[in-house]
Length: 104
Image 1 (cartoon, rainbow, N blue to C red):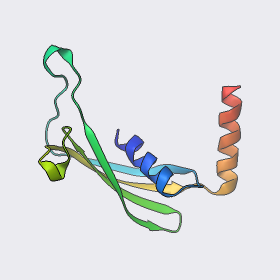
Image 2 (image 1 turned 180 degrees about the vertical axis):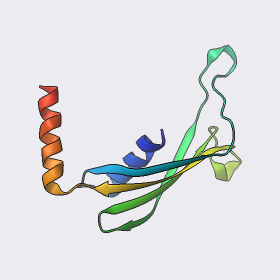
Image 3 (image 1 turned 45 degrees about the vertical axis):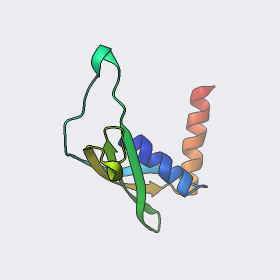
């Protein structure tokens, strides 16, 4: 979930480039619920923010809570930090061709 949420943030905040995850570290803070009564899935919330950028690197931090925002008293389940790297244009083009060929 962290990689997906953080990757979406980077994709939207830095439009016009393709990025990949270089590093993702997670610190677990509290157990999360697997299912509620009657087998219902728990609601989890991931909030991510860009904490810095340098040349082709983007640094992102995120927090996962039990559905409520951490600022509103939600229980912090885990925190993550990640580094994303913008692909060079020629690499992004090659990856795009491979992906297109795989869907044909």
